[in-house]
Each structure stands twice: as structure tokens, then as C-alpha cells.
Amino acid sequence: MRVLIAPDKFAGTLTAVEAAAAIEEGWRRRDPEAVVLVAPMADGGPGFIDVLSAVVDGRLLAVTVRGPLGAETPAAVLVAGETAYIETAQACGLHLVEPADRRPEDATTYGVGQLIAAAVDAGAKRIILGLGGSGTNDAGAGLLAALGATSQGGSLDAGAKGLAELTEVDLEPARTRLAGVEFVAASDVENPMLGLRGATNIFGSQKGITDDRKPAVDGYLTKFAELAGRKTADQKGAGAAGGLGYALLLLGAERVSGIDLVAALTGLEAKAGQVDLVLTGEGAFDFQSRDGKVISGVAKVANDAMRPCVVLAGKVQIGAREMRTMGVESAYSLVDAVGEERAFADPHGSLAAVAERVARTWAR
Image: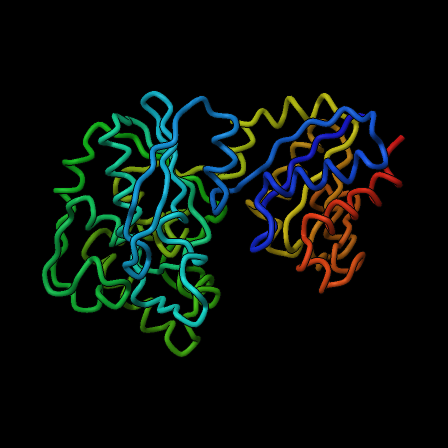
């Protein structure tokens, strides 16, 4: 039996690399002679650098940056020749702030700008940024401030609230500093930055923005966009990572699918053609897994290669019909198999146990 294991992270419990190792361990208990190919995945959010550092021939540059609420935060830039890879969540991720301490209207992307500056100082002429998992909603204003952009009235580096009193924004110092540098924004969403489908209204709740504050916060971002470039705010991907996509688009970035980029770099298509079965997974297999996420991307590659795709997830919250529409043959839930308490207490062991059960059905 030849198997390709290509999971996303199991948020809060296992990285994609750890999840792949657990699945392989469980599969081999049942099928020790299997030929197993491993390709941990990411869609641009947390785990982006972890996954790419295993397949990109480069070096990790350690950098200390300002976190979303100002605390010094360790991060890394993957440098490969004149190309650099940045995981923006390392500087502005939701996971960097304890739930009780989250102040989404004050959170800034300044640290992401510091990562870009470090990449440029290291000689990068092409910078690929993975967007996702952010705890910020400042339209990337902090990023621009870190790179030299200036303002009058409000502040570019005080989170969304700092944008409320802006009267003038000058992006030219940042653009001048980055002249000759190509940017690629890799994200899992295509939302614009403003309005009902924008960053605040669609993704604000998961960052701690309450419904009663959303109109005001969207207004702050609208004020910024009116001064920096309203048309750009309507482009696909501008709403990624709390509007971080918008700031990158202002700098001339090309927006691409995060999972498609990672799949290409890891050689996923070629690997899928060499196996009999593709296994993928993530923490929650639900309706958000459909567009631009790892499971949908891996399932598409598996289907193009005419190979069955099976999902292992912490929870399965999607029906068989929707599953098949995505190209997934079957899905297995850790919570259903071993119970919620064990699934969280021993995620590696639980995932390995479910993978062993999957092998009983699918190994030949």
C-alpha cells in the first residue's frame, strides 16, 4: 500500500509536522510495510514556515519583533537566495495573546513590518508572506508604519483605534524603501477589507471584536482606506489577516492561494500520483474547510490524480454530501473515536489511534 499523508495543523494541539508523524505512526501499526510519503501542509497561517523550512533549501534568520500588543516576540524569516518567506502570524498571531488579555482594537501589525525589513536587509528581492491566524484588525497600518509610512492626526501603529482620527497618510517612504522588492501575499481568503464581507464583519468575532463594536471598527478601516487607497480595499484578499492583505496590495503585492503555493513547493501533485490513497486532516472539518483551506486543496490534488482522499479531524462537522462535493471519500473524528477528553489530553496518541483504525478499512 502506498499512502500520502498531507495534513494541516490541528490548531492548539499539533503542528502539521506533528500531525503527519502521528498519522504515519498509527498507519504503520496496521500496515508496517506501507510506502508512506509525508507532506505536511499549510494555507498561509500558523505553521507556514514550519512546513516550508522542511522543503525549501534556505536558512532561518532569527528576529525579535514587536508582538500584536507590543511585547517582544521571537520570529524567523526563511531566506533562500533572494527569496524570503514570512509567516505573519509569528508577529501578529491570535495565539500570541492569552484570551483574557486580547484587545483587538489595539493590536498592531508593526512586527510584520519588522520581519519584512529584516528580509530586505538580508538581501531579499522577493518576499512571500503567509497570511492567516492573525489577532489584528488594523488594515496592515502597523506594517506600513514599521517600513516608514507616516500619518497626521491619528496613528498607524496603535491598532484599529489609531486610525479613527487620521487626516493624512503618506506611503511613499515605505514604497521608496521597498523599491525593487516583489511581494506575494499567500492567503486562504479572498474577502475584501470593508463592508459586510470584509475583515471586521466576517473575521472580527474570532479575534474578540464584539458585534456592537464592528460598525465602529469597520469605520476606522474605511477612514484609513479613504486616505490610503479605497479602490485597493475592494480587491480580492484585501481582508486577509485583518486587512494585512490590504497593506501588502498597497505595496504592489500579488495575491495567491496559500494552499496552492505550499502544494507546489512541496511537490504535492507529483506525490499524489505515486500513491494509492491520500490522507489529510485538521482540527475541525467543517464548512470553513471548503474554500482555500488545506483539506479542500489536498482533496482537489487527490481528485486530479484520481486517488481517494480521506480526512482525519479532531471534529467532523460536515455531512456526507458536502464531503463528497469537496472530493473527500470519508472522514474520521478523533472526538467520536476516543472521546473529547482524551483527544485534547493526548492529541498525538489519539490521532495515531484513529489512523490505525483508518488503516484497517483502507489498507490492502
